Image (cartoon, rainbow, N blue to C red; front, side):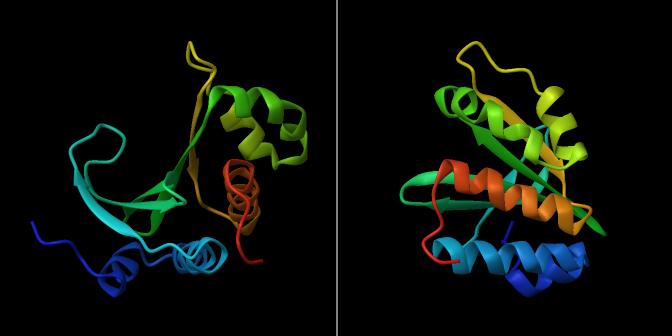
Length: 135
């Protein structure tokens, strides 16, 4: 299937934080979205991947009126940042606690982006992976 363009996807999601996160990713990391059609259990259909500096930042899973952001925090980084988790919102702390580390310590955080507070947590989590180029 042909990938939807950004405007079509934005209209499909119809959630103000979708455009806010996309704009921030493009500004902070200078990256462009990559539309990928997937059959994975996490979110079959079109999803949007963001990469910066050769590494994955996050994947967005759009649905009508909502979306989820998947952030994978590598094992060593997750261990180093564990002490910073209490500064995140209660929802994000709950997702962290409910996402036990894999055998290599990696955490797979699937965050429903439902509030500006969660959006700010996503920015923090992504900055742990890679410092933004621009503020």
